Image 1 (tube, protein in one colour):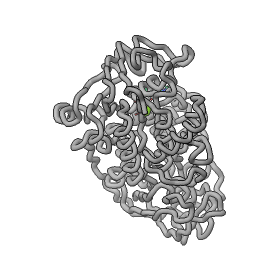
Image 2: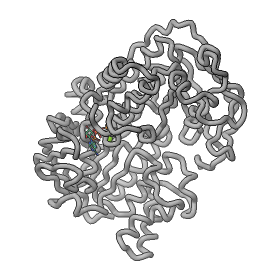
Image 3: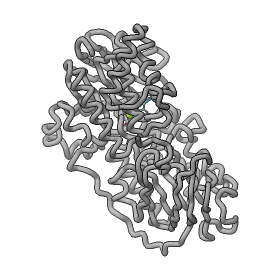
Image 4: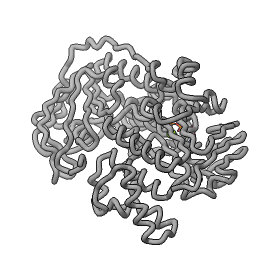
Amino acid sequence: MPAHPARVCARDWGWRHAGRKGFALSGLNLTIEPGQRVLLLGRSGAGKSTLLHALAGVLGGADEGEQHGRLLIDDEPPAAHRGRTGLLLQDPDAQIVLSRVGDDVAFGPENLGLPRDEIWRRVADSLRRVGLDIPLDHPTSALSGGQKQRLALAGILALHPHLLLLDEPTANLDPAGVLEVRDAVAAALEATGATLVVVEHRVQVWLDLVDRVVVLDPDAGVVADGPPEQVIAAQGAELAAAGVWVPGHHPSPVRGARNVGADTLLTTDRLDVSRSRANPLGHQVDLTVEAGRALAITGPNGAGKSTLALTVAGLLRPVRGAVRAADALAQGIGTDPLRWRSRELLTRIGTVFQEPEHQFLTPTVREELAVGPRALKLSERDIAARTEELLDRLRLSGLAGANPFTLSGGEKRRLSVATVLASRPRVLVLDEPTFGQDGRTWTELVALLESLLSDGHAVVAVTHDEPFVDALADTVLQLPAYAGSGAAR
Ligand SMILES: Nc1ncnc2c1ncn2[C@@H]1O[C@H](COP(=O)(O)OP(=O)(O)OP(=O)(O)O)[C@@H](O)[C@H]1O
Ligand SMILES: [Mg+2]
C-alpha cells in the first residue's frame, strides 16, 4: 500500500480546453492534505471532471489546451505521478480492458513492470479489498454494473495509488450497485489511507465517508469548503439554487395537467426481448403507452431495461410477442414500428440511447439539434426557433458552437435528449435521461418533459433516478433481475 498519501495543491490554477474561448476553471486555489477525503461538487460544466483529469495527469499536452498557474501532487506535476493516481469513471463498461477478471486487474501492475509474483499478489489482494470473491478466469462481460465498477476499482488499487480520483463512479448503477461501490471505496480507504477526491451529483451516498466538501464554480473557483454538515448548514440553500444537489433542498417539480383524453399510442403483447436473440430475457411484458402519460421502466443493472426500451421504440425485433402502434400514432402507415421508414419514425417515436456519444453526427451542438428538424424539411426559421429554444432551456446556449464530443458528461446527456425533443416525436423513449444532471438542469429537463406530456406526448423512460420517477411517472414497470447471465452472482 502507498508509502504516503498524496498532497494536492492548486495555485491560481486554470485550464482552457483547446477550441474553447473560456477557461473551464480559473484562479483555483485549493490544498488537499494527505489522507483527506474530499467530495467535489459543482453544477454541470463547472470543471469537476477537468480537475480530476488534470490530477490524473491525462490533461496537459499543449494541443489539448492552455494552463495557468500551478497544479501539484506532492510538489510535482501530476504527470510525474501517473500510475500512482487512480481515476475511476462513471461508465462501468468503458474501464474494463480484458475479458477475464484476473487479467484485467493485472493489466496496470504489468504496465508498471512489476515482477510476476508481486503482480498476482496484488491482484488477489485488490479483489479481496473490493469484495469480489470470484475466480480469476471469470469473464468480465458476465459482471453486473456494480461488480464492474468494483473490478475497475480493484485495478486501480493494484497500482497502490496514493490518490484516488472518482468521477461519478455510481451514476450508472442501480441502488444495490451504488452501495457495493461505496462500501468497496470505504474498505479501500481504510486499508490504504489514500487521499480521495470524489465527484458525484447526488451527494447523499458519500456524506458519511468524506470529511470535506469543496464546491467549484468555473469563474469564482472554490465557492464553499468545509466539513459536510457545516457547508450544508451554512450554504445549503444557496448551493441548491446554484444547481448543486444538496440533501434537504431537493427540487420538487410541479405536475402539470395531463388532461388529454389518454389516446393509446402503443401496446405490447406478451413481449419478450433480447439483444442477441440467443438469450431472451424470458419476460412477457404487456404494456400500454398512452398520450399524456409517462411510464417508467426500472429494475437492477442487467435486467434488460434498455433492450426492452429499444424494442418498444421499434429499433429491435421482439424475440416473442409483438409491439403494436395504435392508429393514433401510426396514422395510416401500419401497426409495426419496425417497418416504418426512419423519417416516419422521427415524428412518431424518438429514442435517446443510454450512451450519448453513439448519437452525435455533426461538428457542433447547434447543427446536432437541427438534424431532426432538417430531416422533417422544416423551414430554416422553424429550425432556428426549435434549436434556440432547446439550447436556452437546457442551458446549452453558451455551447452552441462547441463540438458535441467535447461536452462535459451532463452537457452531452442534455444534448442527446434535446436532439430527440427537436423532432417532437409523439412517443419519447428515453434511456436514463437525467444522469449526470445537476439540480437546475434536472428541474429544466423534468419541466420540459412535463410540458410535452401536457401537449399529449407520451414518455417511456428507463431510469434509476427515484426523484425522476416520483416527479413524472404515472406507471412504473419494474423488471426483475435477469436470471440467465449469471450477472447478479
Ligand atoms: N475535451 C474538451 N474539449 C473542450 N471543452 C471541454 C472538454 N472537456 C470539457 N470541456 C468543457 O469544459 C467545461 C467543464 O467541463 P467538465 O467536464 O470539467 O465539467 P463537469 O463539472 O465535470 O460537468 P458534468 O457535471 O456535466 O460532468 C465545460 O464547459 C465543457 O464543455
Ligand atoms: Mg464531469
